[in-house]
Amino acid sequence: MTSPDLPDYAPIPPGALGPAVNEQGYYVGRVERNLYWVTDSVYNCAFLATRDGVVLFDAPPSIGGNLQRAIDEIAAAEGVPSTVTHFVYSHHHADHNSAAFLFGGDVTRIGHEETRRLLTRDDDEARPLPDVTFADTYTLEVGGERVELAWHGPNHTPDNIYIHFPGHDTLMFIDVVNAGWVPIYNVNLSEDVIGYMGAPEIALSYPWTHLISGHLGRLATRDDVAVHQQYIADIDASSREALEAVDPVPFYTQAWPNMWAGVKGHLDAVVERAAAPVIEKYTGVLAAADIAEFTTSTTFQIMQSYRLDRGHSGPVHP
Ligand SMILES: [Zn+2]
Image (tube, rainbow, N blue to C red):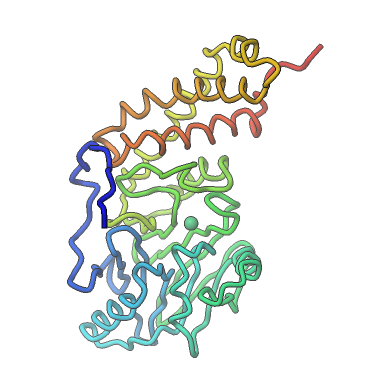
């Protein structure tokens, strides 16, 4: 195998990395009391180990069979059952849930009604449909524990929910904030830019100390969410400045009659101007901030949302 020729990127800020994984490739840790999180250093998910059985929240395929190993390890240590009786989908995406099929039998699957619709569409036997669905909120009570599920509108996906553990000082909310790292391409591969930008404020409106954010190898804090919010706010402000500052006329004049060539020249110039100061500011603060494509593609999405969703598409022809 030839090794890929990766550029030399900036060092990962030490705080961005989590605990080492074991020989099987996973780490399981206590969040609070009987709530645990599991990671393979890239993905993370969670489970509640109750006296009446285990409630599992997401099943990333990259953790896969290690989920039951982690559950067995904790159940043996705590003297509770190791059977998964309930499974909760955070959202429909396969990269967080296509090991869901491993937990079959008598399991009750719970998800947002939009998750059920999207999983029906996707028709993937690795992600069985939820039996129990809800539209706005759902309270799950198992083995004396309570979990509050809520949908507050589309963000990363149309179905991405907030999972609050009021007795564990914890929120689980996936694929918006990457603990200590920048979002990857296109606002972390998100579908609703306005929803994505507003979601951290909703997450912070809950009381919690620990955030299970789906990525990467550690839990997130309220400070992590604040840094993420500032990163996005900086991109937003920078995009507006660049849209004002870059004169589109020369691009279209030169490109005429190839208007799409003019669009590309103009928007590339806006994105480059908007993203450059953000990349510089966050390199060394958020891991992978110097991978320019992540910030430039996110900037492009936010800049387009500014134009398309927030009405700054240009003057109306007289
Ligand atoms: Zn996702």
